[in-house]
Length: 319
Ligand SMILES: Nc1nc2c(c(=O)[nH]1)N[C@H]1C(S)=C(S)[C@@H](COP(=O)(O)O)O[C@H]1N2
Ligand SMILES: [Mo]
Image (cartoon, rainbow, N blue to C red; front, side):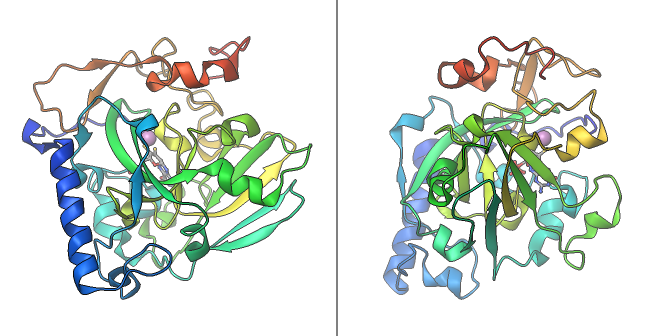
């Protein structure tokens, strides 16, 4: 992951909460007015392949943030998704060909009830929440994103992890004909990530199927991805196809490429520098070119919820 300079973005591109919520309400009303909403809570506009299909989501106030949400336009055009190219604009340009139906997620390994879930069943497994999370890329930029989904633990409890399940590996899709980026050998595809079982079962760890009350755009990791807000963005694997519960710690893609730079834990930590740059501050995307960099928060601001997971661990060693 290189560290790139950001283009200037006017502060007008931050959307106040009532504006994006209003837009979503309008979309939902429009969808309800003209189209039947299916049992899965997904409007038939989406089933018919139209874009901006709405989801039935309920805001979970436990995860509300007192910070402006990043404009949808920026969240969907400034991306890291190397399967579609390494420029921030490549995923939005190239991900249109990602085939998101049919799609299944297979859960295997150290579980009592291994099972393959169809994406449409995942959409119905639990009520879709809206949770606003701060997200921080290891490269030094951050966003505030309203994710739609539910805790990953809701899914994992369905398959009953065994007592040997100490880690969870996430394997993501490879569609060579649809992903121009996989021709480059930067990553040993598929992109893989992993969490410790207690991290995976933590209520903050989210299985995401939408943003802003709409079906997840391809460039953001459709049809299903993770959001792990206290870790650097690369831990939040996109377009997941396999979830494997393991006894041994798996090796993540970025760890394999550059182990001195990208650790397995990758907890956001202002006091532990990347070997090539400080992590003490960050730039909030959309805050404006002249806005000062902000201080990076320990565990990205989620220390109250997650610090206990790492009690007694040397976070310099387990970076
Ligand atoms: N499959 C896959 N998942 C991925 C990546 C990727 O290249 N491939 N990039 C990661 C990185 S570095 C970040 S910062 C986030 C970006 O998510 P966003 O584009 O939705 O903001 O996705 C993560 N998940
Ligand atoms: Mo990232």
